[in-house]
Length: 75
Length: 142
Image (cartoon, rainbow over all chains, first blue to last red; front, side, top):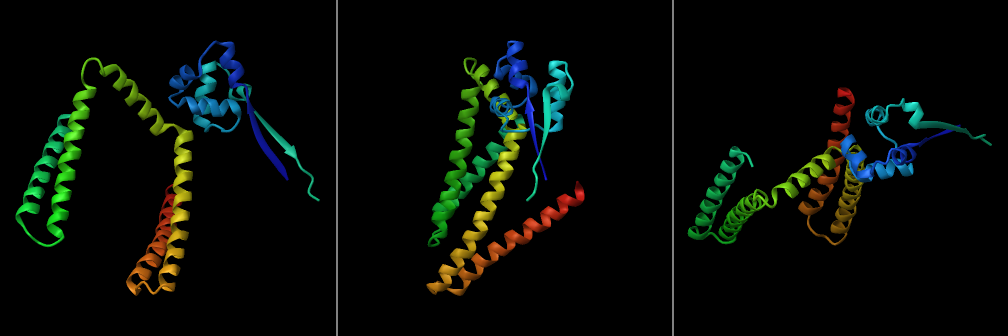
């Protein structure tokens, strides 16, 4: 069985550009808490929000969101 | 506030006044007080909306109100909050259904009357059936 998870570079990219969470949230038309949850990895965005974020940072989705699969051996 | 909203509030106030007058003039035990209370609540809530509107449209409050409305719009559409609201709705639906079954059992245990027990069981069953119908409808649509 494979356990899937997703990491992202949102916090790193945002800080690199000197953008506040509030500013990013306003540009994405989401709440500041959503940006916080995304950065902490507690929430995975919809594909639409992922596209909007990617376009905002001028990158591809794969460059921001890293999909990982862990393989667990079943006993 | 749109002109149509103002007209609606004015209509509510008129209806409220009519209900208050009916409540005061018609002396039917229990129902006259109920009609009076309904009319009073309608008048009070409509007046409060008018007051709120004029408070927000004052020049010194306009900017703060604009920000507040924008934040409310964002919160309404925010996908994480939508997801959380849906989850909260599902949990409260499940809890209500179980609570209705438990309450009907307790009511039956204490011989509270057939009508009460039937209503409680009916509400729980209706909740389940309605949820299933809506789920199937949404599945077909998506």
